[in-house]
Image (tube, rainbow, N blue to C red; front, side, top):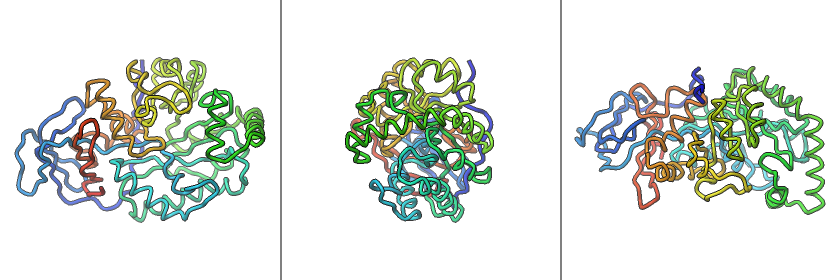
Length: 398
């Protein structure tokens, strides 16, 4: 079986200033294969030394036995959209929203994020507005990144809604210079994948968009019509656009072995939120990494009634965890997995090295000399991890 992770490196982000020197000593260092009492030293934003022992050198920060782990790597979060549209149809200024989003993620231990932006509308809320949305937001994000306004490292993740009339037009507005990291294939057609249960879909849409019964029925018919008209064409086109952009391709809500077979043919690198054990097992066969949502793991099940992340973890079918819609859930989920697997390094890898490798970021995700100085200081309070410090390239950001 091939490795579920690609090997070609994605170009790194344009970040702000790197730090001078930092040493975190007398810590429990969570390395890739062990937990070691020692110190990690960062110079000019890069880990330059890892030493064993509880000695605290002059000028070092005494971690008093706290855990030190790599900064978290987030591949799929809707959090930026929550800041841009805090309520349905309420627009918020772009730069303040992005800065608030960045600060929130830093406060939860996320030091690298792929900001998910919808391309292709699935709601009848004005096509012109939807066409402008992702390109405009991406321009604001890239400008802020280039100016060094962010605390953490940001990349673009384009969520390609194949059931829309505008997807290919919107994707065409992006080019290789945008350095898009991920293109994920979305198909939210009612009655399949995430929303096989129409009751769950109705509850979700009615609460989010305030639809009554007649409006929901119209929405379902609209979606079915879009899928019939554009589904196949847009899936093929989005795969081609991902290749043009040099982005990692992800599937979304694969449900059957046939879905996964198609994903493999398309060159998918990782599967976001497969909805069944059957799909996750098929991903293993095809060498596709499996990603599940931290809220699913923490809540004990999917809000849509799909497979529980814990079930996949216990079946050895889970590689990556995403915070999805709760940024603070990412760190918590890693410690939940450590309890399930009785293996802290393996659990931490699902939110650090595994997502980094899945998107070809080979310069981060582990406590290892030569990698970025993105590190967290964590103390366990009962079953809850307490975040006591966040450093991005050795700069304290949380």
